[in-house]
Image 1: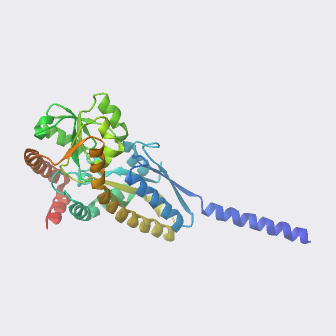
Image 2: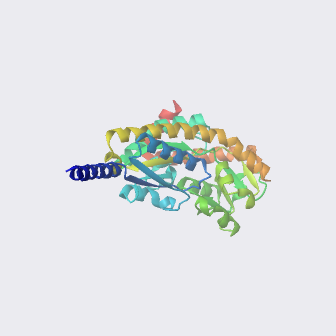
Length: 325
């Protein structure tokens, strides 16, 4: 009899353990476009760790960095279709789909962290609504450091870039190149060194973080700190996958996302000066733009702001008006 009860008890324990294990097997894949050394990736990994701890291991998210699972242009569709459950991308890359997604890439509109935060705050409702309409939920956003111009030579004016192959990473930077009289070429961050060495690109606008991540001193010589705008990465999830979580786990994800957003913005600002210092120490000429460059940037920004507001419609105009209050 004892052996019978022992067998039954062992069976119940096995079933219990099996049930506990199954409760911990919700697994999400998270493709990101940037390398492990990038501050966005480090922030995402901390977010993932905090989610795992807060849910008691019931939700396990695996980060696939450096475009190892999906390339940046594939990430939104991957999340939207449920191929992956969560992802990160540069939101302005979606600007051709809807101008609202490019709210952060207007030269001269928001040129500091404080201004970029305000712009994000007023744009967030429209941004979230568009993602939710497509079956996704915005979790958090983090800004890159301000954008500067990289070149292979000393320049007195942005007009010196006319005719060059100018690396673009979103519709806004492609338009920026066109207004300079340059030829925009799309190159993802992971492919920058090869593209410049092969002559496929000759100049670009990007942050100091990109310069350090890709060791720009190996293929470029100059960085002009124009502080044109602060583009943002967003982390977002498939809404069906999110809604399938328990209420407690959804709250845990949102709490970890809020912490990641605050931490990411603070880290971006903290690292900004260090990125420029590193490039200078590696031999690049790092400096402020000339007065001519600043004037050119202002003119281009005015053109692009007007174009964006027209494409973005009533929501775009409302965002600009709220930002300028």
